[in-house]
Amino acid sequence: MSEPLLMKGNEALAEAVIRAGCRAYFGYPITPQSEILEYLTAEARERGMVVLQVESELAAINMVYGAAGAGVRAMTSSSSPGISLMQEGLSYIASAELPCLVVNVNRGGPGLGTIQPSQGDYFQATKGGGHGDYRLLVLAPDSVQEMADFVFDGFDLADKYRNPVMILADGALGQMMEKVVFREYDPKDHETAKPWATTGKSGGRERNIITSLHIQPEKMEDINKHLQEKYRKMQTEVRYELIHTDDADIVLVAYGLAARICHSAVEMGRNKGLKLGLLRPKTLYPYPYDMVRELSAKVKGMHVVELNSGQMVEDVRLGVNGKVPVTFFGRMGGMIPSPEEVLASVEARIAQLHDEPREEQIYA
Amino acid sequence: MPEVAELQPALEAVWTKPETLTETRMHYCPGCGHGVVHKLLMEVVDELGIRQDTIGVAPVGCSVFAYQYLDVDMQEAAHGRAAAVATGIKRVLPDKYVFSYQGDGDLAAIGTAETIHAANRGENILVLFINNGIYGMTGGQMAPTTLIGMKTSTTPEGRETATMGYPLKITELLAMLPGVYSVSRHAVYSPNTVRALKKAITKAFQYQKEKKGYCLIEVVSNCPSGWKMTPVESNKWLEKNMLPLYPLGDIKVEGTLVQPVQKKEGQHS
Ligand SMILES: Cc1ncc(C[n+]2csc(CCOP(=O)(O)OP(=O)(O)O)c2C)c(N)n1
Ligand code: SF4
Image (tube, rainbow over all chains, first blue to last red; front, side, top):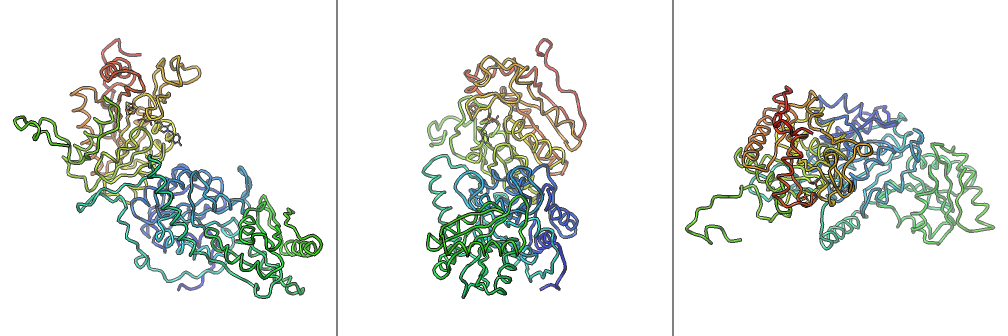
């Protein structure tokens, strides 16, 4: 383990990228994540990594395709508008089963939107995002420590499943400074054999072909089935954190920055005698449906808090499946609610639960 | 398939397939230039003995299936993204030979940005650019290289410049960039042109070995299906109509711009 260091989220992430043995980074500047490109550029030469500022996010994701297809750990990072540009490439990468890491430091949208933190890209990240029937494995950090940790986990998971992994962060996590400890990690111990990589057809082997083209529908369906089988296997990777859920009446569900705010709101509520708990998914795909289901059997209600108009709440409802009311509170457009605001929304819900137990969404 | 020698033991085989071309029957239309360029490319790979060190990129277009025929490691790229994919490969495997094989729609329309920036960075790759003046794969629509007045399914009255602009001579444009080391324009409609193209491909791989930078070879080719002509007609039409605008020859040699070879007088449009 390293000494604890005080770092910005984006820089901690970038440092972890190098320590994880990433060999190639391709990126295009966009706020609030350009520090990743800048940090890696400054470190690249000495630490043996290809770092390239390229002409667009379109180019970046396709360079990741090429480099990952050539068998190395490769990645890109961007923020919402840039991630939108990458969707075609991500679809190709998912189909060709190339392991890689993509970081989205989510900002407010739609459109050019704002550079302030947002969770508006939840659907895009967790439901495929581009065309076709595919999934990314999505990790949602809530601290500078996890910005670093999830890079190591992300590359390992990408290699394990030959699947693109996304770290879905937000501008606040990228910019905030916190203590971070880098884990002991020797990339050599984490190397995966990649006999499928296009490194040159040598040693009498068959040629390797990286492709997503399967013109016969029968063949394409086989590929689809294979991918779906893989996604089923990925369900075992579910990760989450539970806070005060043992005796909770109301469980808040939130990830990333929203979860930090909810954590404070839960503690404030507890001080007032409200039995609140928090479920914080760390993986957004796979989603902890089982834990949501389990909790819904013993609480009076679930309250979802997001920095969007209500996206993850749909997954919570799938898990709850009508057992208890699921309510929602969100801010949008880069606005961040205070813990007081969140607690007030919970209290309003509790009051309502008694007279009118139905599902509802409110926006501040 | 039985060998020629088995069928006609008394006859000598005068045509052999390069070892690095697979047995798979090509799907290209009769008379299409793609097949000829594939064969030449693999002949060169065989002759240079670099099959184990060569990685190709084929983006969407009629040649998206190139990996079925070229017996080297290959990556299929999204439409227009071949230069980016090739960059990704070459940057992490700098000692391998990397080529892309792109149509005019791919290289000069949807992939223009990737094309120009790969060239401008002087990526040490070989780009084979098949200019048939049309979108073959999608059924013969206008390409950026479509000639003025040329009929396609989206220019039924012929391309007119007022609304559709001009044929894009992207090869000349790329040649101007300092990162570009070698640029030439070739064809495959006659034995002489075939021989010249083979020489150019050989040279380009040698340059790549010496890490000279970006090499571009345009092949002015035909699309009998899209042009709605027989193969023979298409080659005649190509010579008469395409070459005046896209003259064959060297455009940039070892980093220095040279005059394109001029066609006979009266053939300029
Ligand atoms: C993003 C995207 N847009 C459009 C297409 C459809 N498409 C496939 S090939 C092609 C044009 C191919 O023309 P060219 O690159 O000149 O190659 P050719 O087929 O003539 O050899 C188009 C438009 C696609 N596959 N992807
Ligand atoms: S459509 Fe045109 S470019 Fe495509 S294979 Fe047929 S002749 Fe060749």
